[in-house]
Amino acid sequence: MRYRFLRFPDGKPKAVTFSYDDGCRYDINLSETINKYGIKCTFNINSAWLGKDENDWHLTKEEIKKYLIDTGHEIAVHGEYHRANGNLRAIDGIQDVLNCRLGLEKEFGLIVRGMAYPDSGICQMQNGATIESISQYLKELDIVYSRTLAGDNDKFDLPADWHQWMPSAHHDNPKIMDYIETFVKYNPNDLYAARRIPKLFYIWGHSYEFDQKNNWEHLEKICSELGGNDDTWYATNIEIYDYVNAYNSLIFSADSSIIYNPSLITVWFTVDNTLYKINSGETLKI
Image (tube, rainbow, N blue to C red; front, side, top):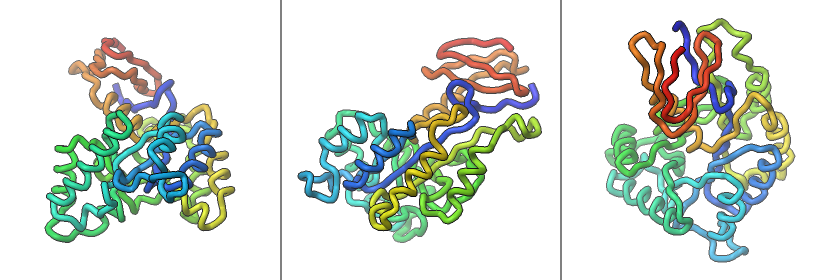
């Protein structure tokens, strides 16, 4: 076995995920737009700011369920009161994250495991906070990933550290359409064997930014280019996390000819450019 690479479900080499913050009213329009193109999003919600009625700037519990959860999207932690973890003592950061998770789980009756750092979260550190201490308490709170910032580029890498998960670009990045063009054109079979890696395009932002700039057509353009491609898997942040970790949990014999999948997820991968599929609990000989 020379080169082995993850492939997304059905053997796809590419994935797309969105992440939008604050649970504001414009998330409804965003959800309805991306749904048309089969794109999935993680919506990061502040539990203390759930709207009280349809005139509130923030979505109500009922609207989040109807327009976000019931249409296949994920909700994730964004801090109870949107407080930047990098500026908080550990005890304050723990409280803000835990209360948000508890609040969302109670309101919606589901398990919440993901997060996006509020207020540029870990771009600066104060009051004794470090990325190591923040990552540690997030792990202890069973927050399995958290999105950070400053990742705008056309590398489309999977995260090396799930608690410093950098997106590919904000939707207003001036090079966003160039990045999308590069991503859409990517075909691992065109490359040397050692470079046929999987690619993830991760877009983030706030839905109210489209309203402020009166450019919802920009979202439509992004979705029309990224959506509906047969070689691309469209997933939420937590679906990406679970799938990649299922792949990483595969157990190999010493010569890599026998593979066991202990996870509950069917996994796809290539070995020397031959595509394989291994079901949950299956042992595969190659």
